[in-house]
Length: 128
Ligand code: HEC
Image 1 (cartoon, rainbow, N blue to C red):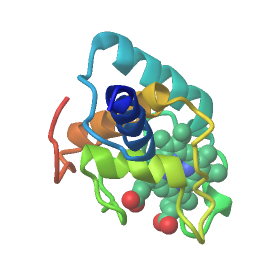
Image 2: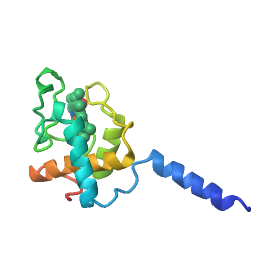
Image 3: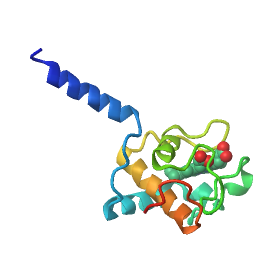
């Protein structure tokens, strides 16, 4: 049993990498990182304020989500948004973002949630 602790740590690491797990705290650094990534990766479809009105939006069916007022198909709890960002949405132009680090995707989750909260549209996890 000499190696058991190492194996256990390995298993735990694998598990936490595969699942959304517990959201990290929304520190100012993480929020800033998320906002920066949002402006770089998401505005072309979702618009610079998350209202679903980016320059590419008119051409898309289904339309990109307006985070201020639309219902989230895949759920709007923080881990659900994280999973949507990882996998994308099949049958739509919403891409998966698994190439971004977990940290950056959590930052993006908080950027999306901030627009939802501003629009009084949040059904779950009403922070930040
Ligand atoms: C190429 C266009 C495009 C880009 C770029 C894009 N999205 Fe989307 N997104 C969509 C579309 C279209 C939908 C709606 C899909 C549907 O209704 O099935 C969507 C839906 C969503 C949803 C709603 C999920 C739900 O459960 O309804 C979230 C959250 C989201 N996008 C976040 C992001 C974030 C964050 C980024 C940037 C990292 C991003 N999207 C980049 C097109 C895009």
